[in-house]
Image 1 (cartoon, rainbow, N blue to C red):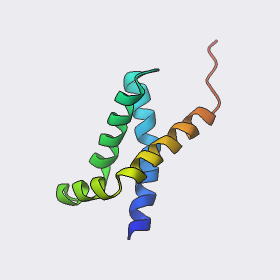
Image 2: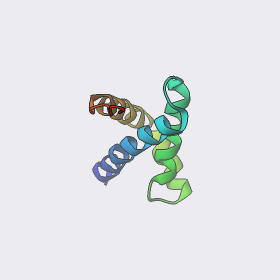
Image 3: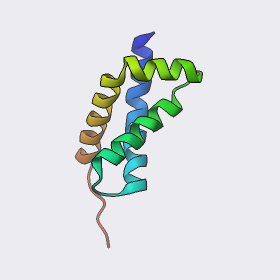
Image 4: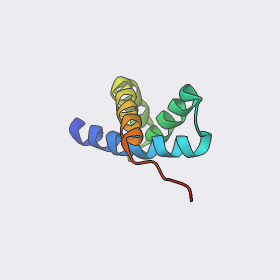
Length: 82
C-alpha cells in the first residue's frame, strides 16, 4: 500500500512543481515548496484525516519527491521565444 501512495506522491510532485512555478515564477523557492506540498496533500485520494497522517509520516519523502521533480523540470528543454 505504501508503494502505491509513494508512486502517487511522486506523480503529484511533478504537477505540483509545475503549478507552483506557474503561480509564482522564478525565485521564492521556499514559498513554491510550500505550495507544492499543499498541492500534493490536497490531491491525495484519501479523506482529510488520512491525508494528514500521510503528510506527517511521509513528510521527508514528500520533500524528496518535490526536489526530484524540480531537478526533472530543470532537465527539460527550455522553450525558445520567437
